Length: 436
Ligand SMILES: [Fe+2]
Image (cartoon, rainbow, N blue to C red):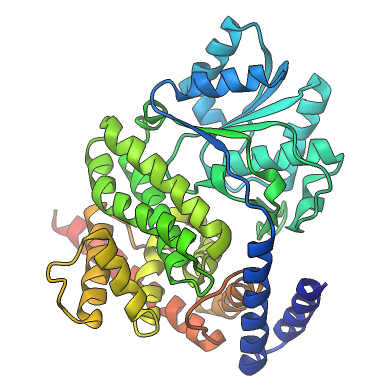
């Protein structure tokens, strides 16, 4: 009830210009409510299978649990590449029937999910395996939950809307990014506006997940980079969250440490199975950390770049991250220094917290360069910034618990800085093309 009241109040505040004092009060109250709720509700975890045999082990579990017909949710590219065959071949050897739905698109809409749901019901599926990136796994969650609750996916949007557990769900991430196989959330896009909405419910956590490095080794370098920075952003935002706990800190720090060490390796040598597996685990840990600590302005603004410009999620995070880490720099100085010391990235552990925090920030920025993040976003329009800022501010006040709050002008200022940097990078690119 309190959550609903906060939500209504937040909407009222966003009808007109941002009332910053009111916004702050609502946002901070809501963050406290979310912290209390997250302590009270159970946060289930999937049973985890790790390594080159992980997919077979996951299928064995599905079969041992009595499931007889599986909906395989994936996308057309992965299906064409034959990625799901690692699972379907094994199911064939065990005489388990399955139906493949490969219609998942990036940022899947309700319609895409409804098609998968209809196929699952028509085929009489009693379980779901999601094989893909975050979009596929989110869609698999929504389909599995909609079928068991006999409702359309859209009805699941919001907090704890499902009454029944989802169909037995098993997930095999093919990217090391969202960690969606570990989270209590799933994102869906509106068919017309493409604005994203989130369903949050612990009942949609899969029964098991397989972190199989052989499935991830085909990921091209730019997607390895984008998704890897998504992991880093989950972990850093969870670490800086005012709702962080000792448990979320453990997972967030483990994820940051792994990304710093293994993302450059996976980016340069995609066949390095050790680096792929470590990045897969980092993504999973990032997902666990954000379940309770949640995210922040990086994601809120990145979601707007995705909605308005189609910027891939991880890259959008990479573009926004330096601005928000600088914004939080003072308020989070001790926390950032503690993180840097915990993961062992400082050169002089006797240095002041400020110096240590700065070393960590520098290393984050260096990592973005090392993995070749493209900072350009074409055709950003300043006239969109008002609506983008309002949507980002609403996302933060509704969902996150951040160390520093901004008013609309602050968010617009960051959008303008991103546009300026992007315009400059585009100009530099065209000059260097002319020279060559
Ligand atoms: Fe993310």
